[in-house]
Length: 119
Image 1 (cartoon, rainbow, N blue to C red):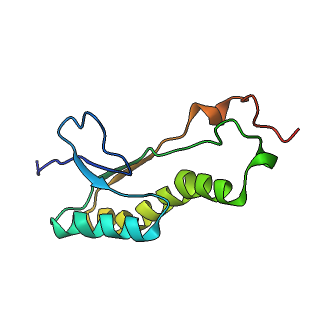
Image 2: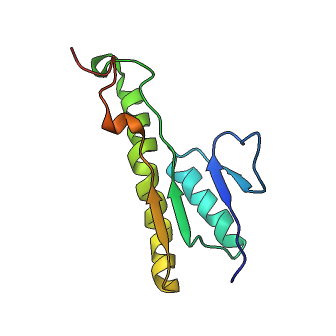
Image 3: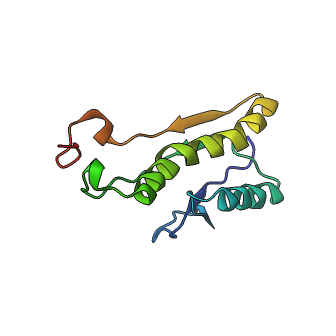
């Protein structure tokens, strides 16, 4: 088997990395994602497994209380970041003939949550 490396892309470095490599990346920023991808590729690496696990919520604000900027941030993190990372790495996985993509969702997607309605 080949070399296995775990990389974490996030704005804040985890307190316990368990040996994973940290790459500072604001997932709301196309430029940051492109820079992180460039860093990974400059090491001669490309993921065979991509786990999109980033997600944020409205911090209890009702939908009509959210500003346009807050709503955009939620979509940038919860939807577009996963799309952009898949867009970058899926072609490499296809060329390699192997790859796995795991998109995580919050349990909030399965349950009614107080203070999240428009009423």
